[in-house]
Length: 422
Image 1 (cartoon, rainbow, N blue to C red):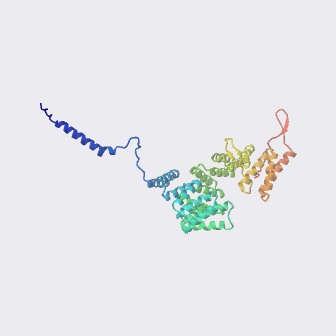
Image 2: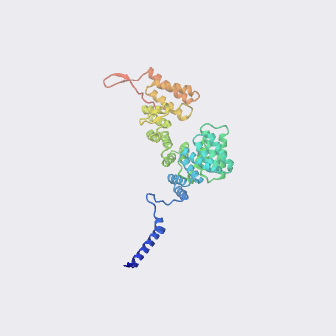
Image 3: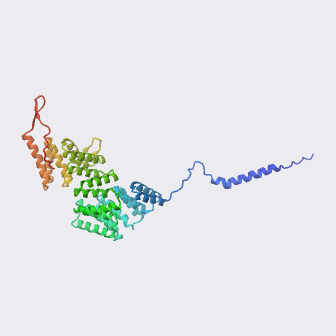
């Protein structure tokens, strides 16, 4: 009647012990290393300093755009590093991106208000944007922080020179610009900005040969800045070294192909030596580079006028003078008449072209506007009088022509005269 006990199975016990040990091993050592499902695998974080080092390497190779991208990446990786904002702001000023440079300089100052370079770069950007009073306030703050800062003295000279060029300086502005440019150069003759600023001051004072020497030195320090080559080209143009001028303008355009100024200047060079077809070609390219800029349209119209293409000249000059919309739908704001040389040229050639194709009602309106607005400028008055005289000659002696069937009519376009007014 007693139940017989079953003997335990040693192999089963051993198997169970091994299974339990395996489960414990998985829980302790394997499962913690397995990423949870549906969660992205983390990537290796790059050292923020490596972006700045990469940017420096690109700069050494002259690859400015890539350097700017690397500095922007460095800022994104470490937004607290002030030096990256400053390096990027300087490169943006070199490339004509003044608003972006201003933002980065201001960001640097939010992090550290003791950096004279930050105030200097902010002042430089504001100067290029025409905010001269604010720019001077910032540069004076930089110099208060570091009175012997060559970079700050150079930029101060540059801002003062801009004021002189834009006719918004005081009696002593030019003298102060000369003094500041000399001070910057004496503090650091190997500083790019010191050579550049000194060259600019020499240019606006008419010392073109000396300006060329300073700007050539600047190019030796850094030959990747479009505006330095542009300045060098202007000075070569001033001393009638036309081949060198075209070379420098072409170099400037290759470094910054979004800027219409190099092609604008090249068109002026070819017009000056009488190659008007080439002048038109480069003026057209300048318009393509900046189709909303009335000065580019005015220059193109002026080149058409020099090439005796009066009707085309009128179309372009009318956009510059009166404003309008291009064939591609780009809006152009007209330029008010004033005493600046370019504006007087555009109005003069617009009126003269209208007169030469016998659109005398419009031509006389332009002449009257010039006589009323620019009564003290001999050239403007002379050109206005020529417009009126041409129209009087048409009225008194309209040219007569016979067509193939013998019908008589008035010639719509007069024969171009050999003398070019305006």
